[in-house]
Image: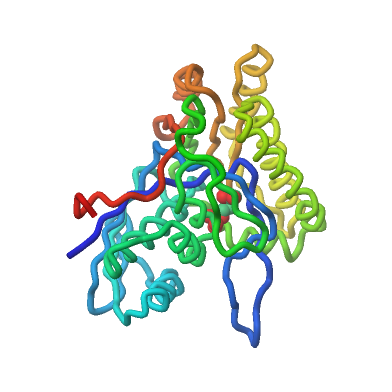
Length: 324
Ligand code: PMV
């Protein structure tokens, strides 16, 4: 019997950018161990739905297209090790939003995949186990194993929840997709290039914990102004270290900069809006419920797809079997 799970992306308010090097004899030991702490929110408006069933060989279909299985093998091997079952998986996944365009599709995707596979094999999927295994596929996926607000510490094998989805009912993120195209540089390549070539990488690593603590304090005190300010510092400094890479990495589009500038104007008018960005040109606006529709409306003419209003989302959940 197949299991279907839905999961949501994890949007970092304090960014993870950089991986610790951990190899022995040319083999990577623990992939995706972060060089910075990150603090994130799970977004309810964006959904990945993944169905897993046991099969003769590993196969993956994403949004109707067969995928190269190698990208998934480390996660599938980790699932086989964790469950002590020598099984293969057929996986089908669809996103409600553009894939690989800086909307954390891999975070939601790996969290849903691991949760569904664990349910399929063992009948259960504890969040900390989902977090550890999903991390192997994509670092940010370890945060999508939890709902609400999460923190993933430097070098940690899994993330943890710092506040539940009910903690901040008025908190909203308005996702502004300025392009539907896939990103040119994967976050993995971008991080490695930054680490290997940017003279600003070490200062970024040294500074990131202070900013992450500030973001966490702002979340725990539900202080939107403090949070918006700290989240902007985090993403701008992340991009500063990328701009120093060789060759430089620039994910932004003119529309991204236009939105950043407009949000400055709105803040001067007293409207609580701050942005964050990831490994792509999409802009995510941090605000409160009463301003979310106005933000979506203001930018709807320059987005490539309709803006998505998100509240704080839940952990992955099984939708089939219905009582699973
Ligand atoms: O783990 P990945 O490959 O999805 O990389 C995530 C990188 C950022 O989205 C830029 C930051 C973050 O913490 O999510």
